Length: 61
Image (cartoon, rainbow, N blue to C red; front, side):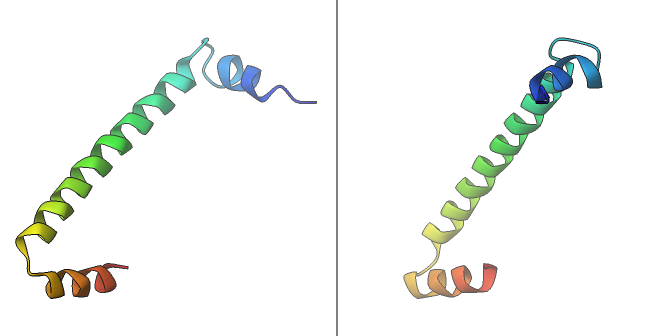
């Protein structure tokens, strides 16, 4: 068996959590960007009329 977690911790960037620290920053940044994007979309959808909103949903997919 291969110890994946051991490899990530010590093998890649010789430190207990060098790689995981980078991964967590990426995850947090992605979450923040996603939340901001969703809020902007909701704001845009609320400003438009209901039938326009349906059109936007189908075109974006």
